Image (cartoon, rainbow, N blue to C red):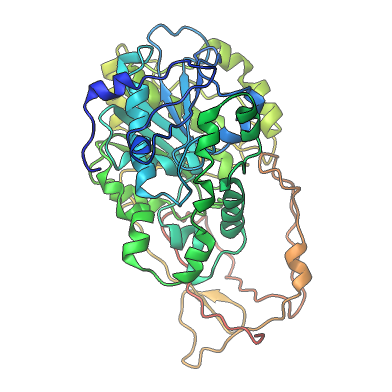
Length: 484
């Protein structure tokens, strides 16, 4: 299993229309019983070359996928991108059984990239991966296998550490997002769990039917996590990006939000662990999980892919720039425009690429939602600062202490320290301010003063001048409950 096939194997595995269903035959899937894996392919005009069943049937299947972007050598339309959506882990039309990023799935991803690169419509037979959240994380796992046709990755909204970031931040089990996400995945991992598989089988897809046979043998990842409450290196190291991203050997473009409500704000440490990547660009900002897809981030995301896949000066097509505000208005609540193309002033691709690569690798965007150009709450930043390293050089680290009298100061409290206490109202956990749509504008919010004994509040003295804080931070707390 440790040896890769030669190029001829992938050429022979090119996707083709056969009996109205299309599968990539993966090397390891074949070894596990001849099962094949179904992709979803989009042409540069949005046409689907290969489609298992109807688009409505496929939509649930591609909701959490690795997106593989490739460029067609004669593209002239507004999208410029030919895309292949693949799913090395969650696909219900593929064989095998689910586990969280097991080794076989990484190798499936390798095979998928190489097979896609072998298509005759792929420009220079180069593939880049791009995506946000799970499609972002999948790139990190697959890229460590170093597919030779992979030229760049663009993961957004990812985490550095499965345990510290999501599963047990601060050592406390995250029974909100983490366990809910796992439950949803397991519900879909059972035979016919996605709901659309039966339609394919009824239409004559015998491969999909056969591939359901092993789905019932999925690994219960919730029980697995509960059985291993402490860090077992043999188990958790392969599931922790900090432990393996040093194997990635292609340029990396990454974005992340400090207030990400799903994957958390612990992503920046990855920057210093891409030891073998020739280039890493990181953009970080205040915001939510999906904010990697806002215009000021997408313009650089697109530029990155143009530089390393298409190898030309990046420029957003006029047609896309014209319709962009309407599209973003429907999605984000304000007609946000794409920023100006940042590299069109250069006379050649080589000059533009050199300028891009010479820019500081770290870009921090401040005050998303407070741009003077758009309505308050729209995902557009007020300003940004760039740095050549992380943490930024020249920082003056500060340590602030919670004081027994409710103040917040840089001096240590007295030796006896003291503590703070409050009573929890269980109903507060059900109090919400938003309707659940993470794309909507942030509402005006008046922060009410907490009533006595309902919270522990610490307030510093009034600042006499602006203070910018950037870099890693931690809240070191000793918590104790009188209940249970």
